[in-house]
Amino acid sequence: MDSRIFEGLKVIDCATFIAAPAAATVLSDFGAEVIKIEQPGAGDPYRALPAMPGYPASPHNYVWLLDSRNKKSLALDLSKPEGQAVIHRLAAEADVFITNYPPEVRARLGVTHEKLAPLNERLIYASFTGYGETGEEANKPGFDSNAWWGRSGMMDLMRPDMNGPPARSLPGMGDHASAMSLFGGIVTALYRRERTGKGGKVTTSLMANGVWSNGCFVQARLCGAKVPPRPPREDAVNALTNHYRCRDGRWLILSLLNEGRQWPVFSQCIGRGELINDPRFADKKSRHANARTLVEIFDEAFLEKDLAEWRKILDAANLVFGVVAIVDDMPDDKQLRVSEVLVPFENDTMLTVNSPVWVEGAAKVTPRRAPEIGEHTDEVLRAAGYKPAEIEQLKARGVVA
Image (cartoon, rainbow, N blue to C red; front, side, top):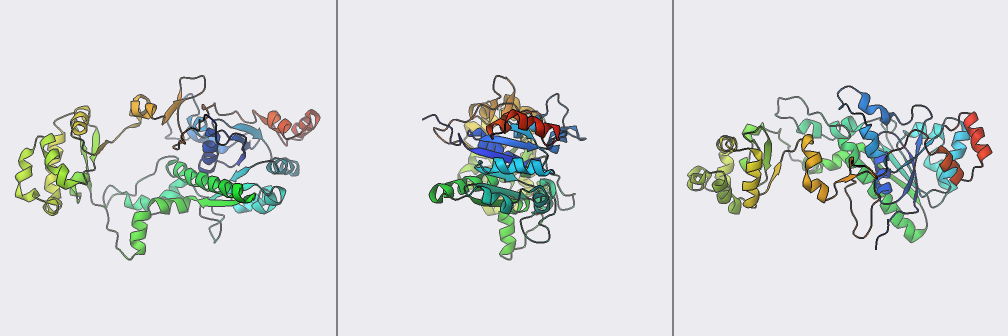
């Protein structure tokens, strides 16, 4: 079996920036045809993100390559009635319609669920918002930095210490995680459609996904627990689940949860076998009570070797740890390549980040380059039944480009 699960599935990506379009990207990876709706002229404002201050300089539009691969771009002005007529025609034949426009904007552009659903009873309408579909914040715009990271409590809890400033998020950090929720919702709705023949509306939000990501501590608070501020690294409550700097300045993080078995092995690995019989560290309770002293001992020990040496030692002992990777590691990370986390673009040596889901026996599409604005306008319109003269009229009126 070597088929693409969503081959023949038609998806309209009528969204901007990251989370909602990224869900469409995952569908495209499994063979769906995705039509990206963009405003004539400027296109999706996400295209301009790398030009903002603080973003890495590159001759390639890396964010657009990542989240718009495999798609076809239709430059369509939805503010015009003729443009809305085009999107309605496309939606009548589509399987999935994805949008993240605020509800008020959807109404103005004629792309609400109430408007599109009567055109196609099998249509899955996937709605993505910052703060949910109802309530006084339903029309409030939001990015993952505020609606996912800030609103969920993670930004506050991830301070380096209780007196430090809130931690900043990375570009797209919450968007790409939230995209997988929207993807899962779409697939769930498609499964229901297989059973009932009916489409429906799927919803999720940045806020909901952020709180879900912080679910352990949020649930603790909902159960009446008081969530303590995180201590600085030097005051970690468990030295065996802390991070340490190596001689070359690189860091690793330990996750030694099975202390009964791993404590003596680890002590020998770091050349501190005398700790095994030290009464201060005789059992888990005493090790936790003396965690600060252990952190100081481990700090000295890890500074004796480079990260590469520690990786060999700890791996040989089958101890659970992780490298605190830097982005410069990624292009040459063999495990990322062999596990297809990084894959090459079609007919190119440049790599891209794969979507994080695989299905045995279902081939993914070899990533194709992201489209230019309106690159596939004629192709998409022809496939929708527009004649050449009609397409030229739409162009002349500025409806498409």
